[in-house]
Length: 155
Image (tube, rainbow, N blue to C red; front, side, top):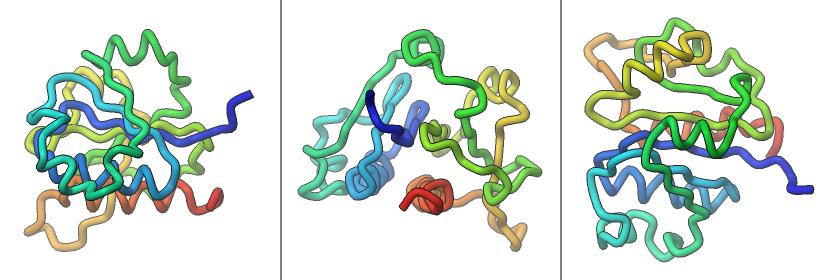
C-alpha cells in the first residue's frame, strides 16, 4: 500500500519562477506537484529549472490537460481538496488537513477558474491579509505557507 502523501496542484500557472520555487518545496517535503491545463511557460524552460535550482530533476510531477481530466483520473475525494483564494472568508488555519490532501492553487493573474470555485465553494480557504492595500500574495509564498500549515501534524 502506498503511504499517504500530500499533493500541490497548480491550475494554469503562468510564472515559471513560482512553479520552480513550489517544485523545490515539494522536493524538500516529498510532495507530488500536479500541473493542470495550459502553462504560461515550457517545463523545459531554463527559468523553471533555475528557480528549482539543482532540485528540479527530483520533482515528482504529474500533468493533466484539464481540471476534468484530473478529476476523472485521480478521483480525489471532495474532503481531500483544499482550494486557496484571497477572497474566501475561511482561514487556511481552520481545517485539519488530510494526509492525502490536494492543495489547489490557481494562476497568478486570475486565481482559480469560476467553474472550479463554484463547484467547491465550501472547500475554499484564504491566508489572512491585514492591510487591504495588498490584494493578494505571491503564489510561491502562499503555497509554501499553506504547505507548512497543512503538514504541521505530519512533519
